[in-house]
Length: 163
Image (cartoon, rainbow, N blue to C red; front, side, top):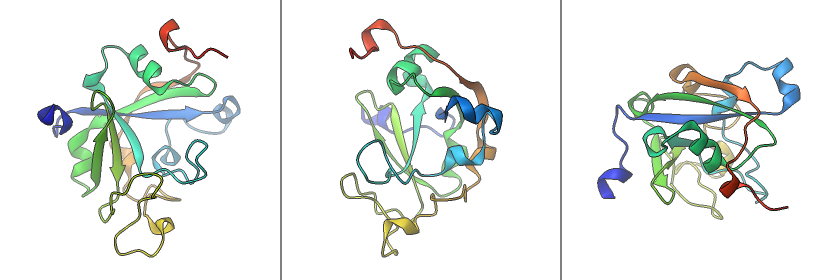
């Protein structure tokens, strides 16, 4: 798994594009807001530690990606790019997931902390000084190509949550 854990420069990585139905009337299928670090991550009350990407080769089908994401209420699309386009910008990353399928993209000066300790640039006093907040400062939007427009997705039976 050690070789598996390190993405190759030519390896394609995916970014999920999440939209509420109303956003489709005023937002493009892929825009620079898709590459900004969220200030509130899920229900933790904390910001996310990086920008989540997924390794395309770790998924047999696109349906496997939707199942991994595990959400169906928002509309979801995908964009992809070779990992080398990201590393050429000097960005850091951490690989995680049971199958080393998830990449947490980090800023060049990231201290690489994990939740519940929020990461921040090493030379910063607060996590809010991370360049991933507010604006796509590394122009990641231009590096990624839209492959699936945001649309309603379903989960396979084994991934559906019982409510």
